[in-house]
Length: 133
Image (cartoon, rainbow, N blue to C red; front, side, top):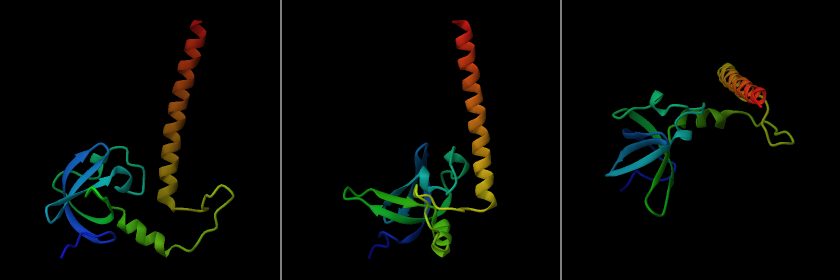
């Protein structure tokens, strides 16, 4: 009987890493894809910072498509934490208030700094182009 079913948590081995995700051997001559968005709850700029070929990983089966492709997630622990969170009312735009702790704030702040730097660089380039005209 197959252990590969939607919702099951399995142990696997990373057999391939691409920019868009990691291929994981989950046994029974089957491989599934962990899309880059399912590697971690934080933004993943470089998947190679999270997984490499040969790593043993725990995955959860998200979907088995009609063509046999298997979608996996490594965000198992985050899902369990989210299940225990109390319900938070959404605002008019559909956003939940007060998500995350210190780590989430730091991630946001570093992302905002990068965005500000990029924005300033682009504005400087535009200014130089205008002066040339």
